[in-house]
Every structure is written in structure tokens, then in C-alpha cells.
Image 1: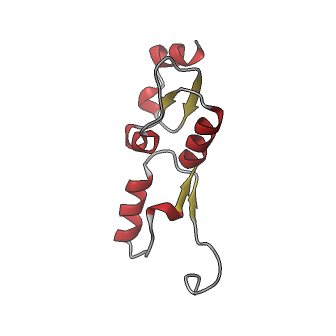
Image 2 (image 1 turned 180 degrees about the vertical axis):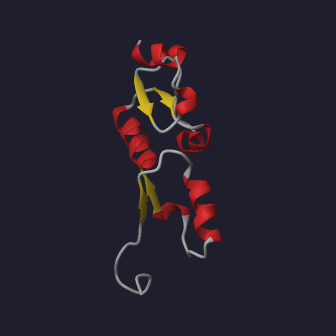
Length: 99
């Protein structure tokens, strides 16, 4: 019904644990008729903000989420993006983030 209505359809989630591509694969396997551009995540919002502010982040996100940041410069970071990534929350990484 939504597809035939004159509205834009989006699938929205606050997950930071996986990329849009992974979400797309999981949702299509469940039978959803969905395109990648219809998925909006908190990582999408973070990427948009990084591009608008033209900053270079230190990405404290799960490795499976990294594809959503392809093309974003991370050399000499001047910002930090934090997601659900317990494996990255250790002294060395936290010290880098605070610096």
C-alpha cells in the first residue's frame, strides 16, 4: 500500500553495529522489497554531519559499520564518531579520542 501511495518510503534505524549494505541483505532475506537508498541509519546521519562540517573523524565504530564511511578522510582526526563497538573501547583508543 505504501509503495502505491504518493509518499517517500524510508526504513529508519538507530543501529551503529552494521552497514547499510548488511542491513539491506538482512531485510531482503526477510522478504522486504527495499533499496539501499531507502535505509537511513544513525551512521547515515553521522556521515552527513561529517561531510557538512568537513571534519576528519576517528571512527570508534564496529568494523562492520566502516563501509558506511568509505571516502571519508580519517588522517589527523579532528572529530570522533562513537558507535556500539566494545572492542574499540580500550585505553589506547580512548586516549586517542580524547586527544
